[in-house]
Image 1 (cartoon, rainbow, N blue to C red):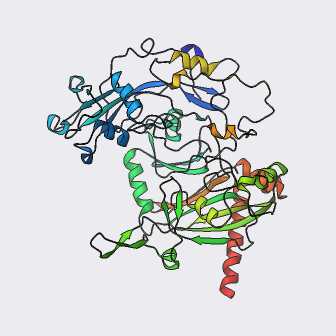
Image 2: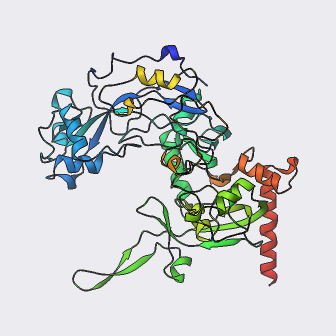
Image 3: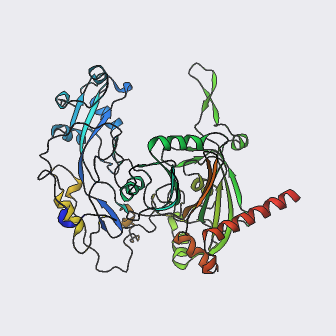
Length: 509
């Protein structure tokens, strides 16, 4: 894996805040070149860089204020404070907010907007004109991710399947039109020698590991994606999960529609039994303003998850204490056993489907703070690394000083020296819970995409990972499975045998 030496870490353009603005890139453009990065404590840190974000203001915002358009359209990953009048007033005063109006008439055939057309508004209360574009200059600090490069499991002339490591997003939008470098797509494209770039076909959640499908070229990706979501397309996704509590030997099936909620989590529909088994998006009766009643799409989509247990795992002493000892989030279950289970998706996979369905059934995925009330905080923390801790050589601090710009608030945050006492995990909760407020990088939940079976261009494929994830290997070891049987093939065979037994008993009944 290539990465720069510290000697190459040097600021571009002197101190960085006296730079000539580049011509605005296309809205869908990625990083213009491979960014420099360093590896520290198992994390991949991309060197900060200045970028101009080009944003098209929606027609519905015409006539509204510039401030309203900025708050509505400009979202930056990890920058919760990048909004509001005080923030944008400072950005405007320093010339990092510019506008250009009537773009479609002035550039009917498209192309880059000439530099002389951009102007700095006089006030945040200026009205947005027709076909306005915003040009926002930011000093980008990409969130660090695990340094592991995805392992290629399968490749042909069109498709590539890899084993995605947990703690790395498949795609990661840094800001409008910028995908960034710290995502699996960019890491794979940098590591490969093939000139044809890879594009994602499906997605796997950041804290989840396992089989992930890509295609060579954007057109191939779009065709593969369309083929896989086509009604009647043959496909099957099989996951391995460590679930809290003892799942009944027969397993369970959750057939409940899902939708993405306002809090960014999946919502399970629980209104009517009829809608739970249907294959159409759920609809509700609502009263219109004129007093009539009409149906309205609630956004729920059909989803079914089949869960089969393959091993029962004694909960370790430290996990038992954290699971049952939190008074503020105490679990109703007192059984100190978890279940390693296989979850199979027969319908199209939905957003957070397994995570939401298993939690709905009373068996959340271990470590999944988003759906397990017994896990403190709201984000996964298992296996997480404190991204603010430097190494002994001060690599991150040297990079910060080399790329520092005077107007960037993030640049004013120094990195911490490594702890002398390394016996305690940096992500452990302190007595007052203050550690839970700090972000960690590379965290995982105990969920792994074990196999993906699908058809493409009349050919059938079944791609599985070469190895089990550490959480599954440890669980099977604790359950008494010998080392030679702790393989993906053995787990899949156990799942199929048990499923076939269930079907035979049901048919006999």
